[in-house]
Amino acid sequence: MTSEHYASIWDALADSPEEAENLRLRAHLIRALAGAVSGWGVTQKEAAERLQLTQPRLNDLLQGKVDKFSLDALVNLLAGAKLKIEVEVKAA
Image (cartoon, rainbow, N blue to C red; front, side, top):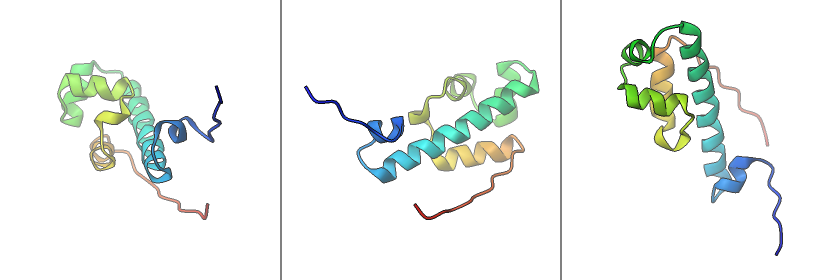
């Protein structure tokens, strides 16, 4: 049995470097949203309404279910949460 080593958990889960980067970005945005929701000090029902989500969908977000959200959907949620995105692109 051989063991493989990966640079990140996303590299281990993804089939390609592009997919791994997409997963990493989605996880980062989900953490930012979950932190914002936590900081609001409101119920999940109120937070879901603020983000225009159903409560089960908000729960998926708070549970970090990366596979349930596209980058596009997360960007829209960030805007709804009044969070600003700054993008920095670097050479690999």
